[in-house]
Each structure stands twice: as structure tokens, then as C-alpha cells.
Amino acid sequence: MSQAQSILNYLQQGNSLTALEALELFKCMRLGARIWDLKQQGYVIGEELIHDERNNKRYSRYWISQDKQLSINFGS
Image 1: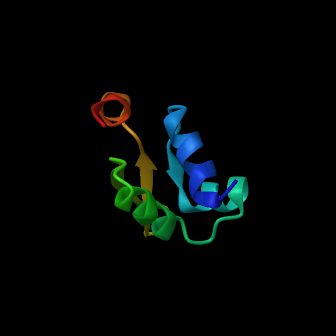
Image 2: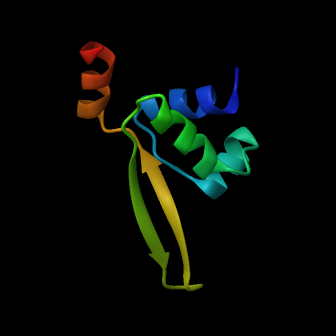
């Protein structure tokens, strides 16, 4: 199974994912690229930019909305 497919399955189970989590769970060093691949396939993936005040870093958290997932699965 490809990284993109593993990430998609994880998101479709209602989970959200950051780059650090993707590295730990899927050994994926380019989560943004895999998310882009999934979006190009038609998946609607939400993104939230998070600012960590402790270390002044920013990162994204990705998810698939259950409502939007249903419209993709049945709307084709």
C-alpha cells in the first residue's frame, strides 16, 4: 500500500494528521506532497494552520470532514 493510500485510510477513519505524526506513523517525510496528491484525486481535505507559542513554530493539521467524505464517496 502506498503512503498516500495509508494516509487516506487514516484520515477516512476520522483522524487528523500533522507532518510529525505522519513521519512517526507512515515514515512519510513529505505529508504536504501526499495531501496534494490526494486533493488532485478529488478528495476534499481540510487544513488548519497551527501556531505553537512555546517554540514559535507553525505547522498544518489535515483531516477529511465526514460530511464531505460522504459526498465524495456517493457523489461520483
